[in-house]
Length: 424
Image (tube, rainbow, N blue to C red; front, side, top):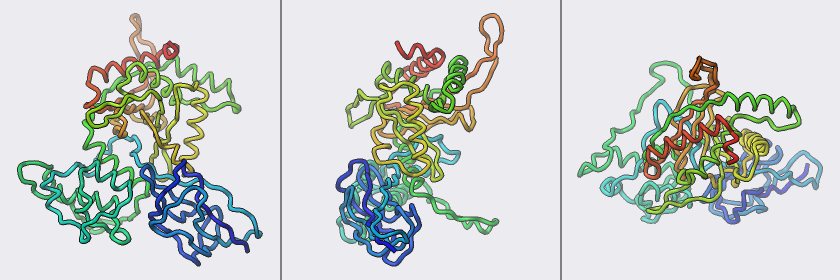
């Protein structure tokens, strides 16, 4: 039996992160990779996992403590030999920004900023003083919620993100004077078990965070989606040939790698798509960090491929594979999900002909790609089989107008038809 020190791993450079939840107690057995504590910065929520299976001997942190990389979390008794150090592990990160996904058939409950009248309809917290994390305060600011009027359900009256969402839903459900607000009916309460067998499954942490962000983005951003098509016949033939040449030694080159490269070229031509709104100003970014939707057992996350403009297709393909693997294993670091300037959601490996991706705030545009299909296309003399890629570009209409959206997809389709243009 040995006692190991479990410390906070690399959490993406954060040095003063709050402990918002302690998930274990002394004497409790834990499995390898089980979450021990939850940390929250203003950018992400992170779980610190256990490197080994064992029994918690002592917990060295409590809710409200501030920690950083290397801070001692717990003492863990294991069956290994004495003196063996704990293997460093990566914190599991729940992204603060919603992953780019197609709008669901039944959209989430709209979460929009309540009017002052709606806010006033709910009473203040008993203490009159809000106690909330920086991330919750950020959500409240974006939704226009006065935290002093929200009743906290967390430890010592701490206001949680769920409390803010509940407050907004309650405010919107009431009748708001002056015609301001959505005047929504309350969400229906149904005993589903009355109609047949049911199973209740809790949402993962990622889905909870993503759902709130998606609802906010869908309601607060005036979305427009431009649909287009790209002839990728030559590109697909080249990709298949390239993978055959690389064999097992090289990275697997997917169509997404070429999409990233082509999007960077299009973003350089149309810089407004690589920007963010900041009040009445538009922040144009001179760097190109492309986020992409990665499917994981816990839901979609959005890893960010940094400096895509400085990398070739093979290096992009390799990094896409590495980031996707870490996402599936829940081992993304905080830095892996930060700083995106444009996002791509590719469903080509699954199917579909078109969809409406939701803009990933604070970005202003996102590209959706569906499955390539073979269709007969008239070449001026005859119909010939061509491989066609459907494109769906959603953008923030406050920044981008329809003409610019059409020009972007037209230029992107030209690049994908002949990738030599991306070098010009």
